[in-house]
Amino acid sequence: MRFDLITLFPDMCAALREHGVSGRAHQRGLWTLHAWNPRDFTHDAHRTVDDRPFGGGPGMVMMAEPLALAVQAIRADRLQAGVDSPDQVAPVVLLSPAGQVHHQAQARGWAGGTGAILVCGRYEGIDQRFIDHYVDQQVSLGDFVLSGGELAALVLIDSVVRLLPGVLHDAESAEQDSFNPALTGLLDSPHYTRPEVWRDQVVPETLLSGHHARIQAWRRQQSLHLTQAERPDLVEQARAAGGLSRQDEACLDALDKAR
Ligand code: 9D3
Image 1: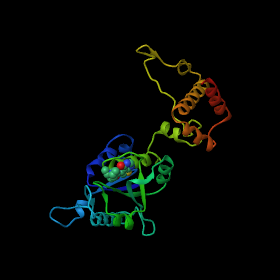
Image 2: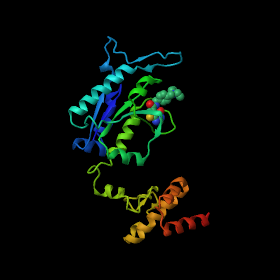
Image 3: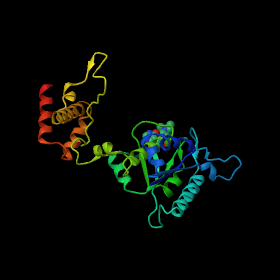
Image 4: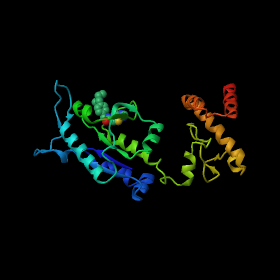
């Protein structure tokens, strides 16, 4: 899997390449991340990548040509590297508040591909003619305002890379197994570690019982409880996907009655 980032701030890629789960997987060659600076595709002395908006208004707009030249250079490089073929080219994805909101199902879909060319905007926006000609898809992280597309792109890549085979260790992978009833899109149950008593607060006794079945049932109940309280929309989604057992429904009923 290979991602190519078009960004005015190539150094931001270090966050994913050098740390944690994604950093280790990068080091092991399970994925790569290349950054391309539009300034390197300009021809004027000032290396200009932005200009004032036609029609007036505040701020600056990213020019189409440096972005187009970057996409073309990336396409050639991906072909040359054998990552893409002439009839199987990577999608060009623009990170934008106007895009479709990224979800886990989307991440799973991307994990089956060969990567993407991600375009990160800065300033007020990007010349629409570049978007019309090159961009296949626009992705947003949600309804809040960022200063640019870089952090959004890194979030998206992280969500995909951790799903690649061999990236997570066994324990983490088991948790992602779609047949594991512990994971039906519900929130996780609380976690505890030593000491058994911390500032007068004890660990729930079930977790100390050593009784595996009781512990599993407790965790499921906590999960249902927490999700019902904080994210009832996720409980409804899990129900619609057939992810709730009769025992789960009984647990939720008991919660309703207790209120
Ligand atoms: C102040 C300018 N905004 C008018 C309300 C438009 C605007 C332009 C550029 C807003 C944000 C940005 C930069 N954001 C992104 O590039 C971005 C983003 C986001 O802001 N929120 C959620 N997901 C994403 S993906 C890319």
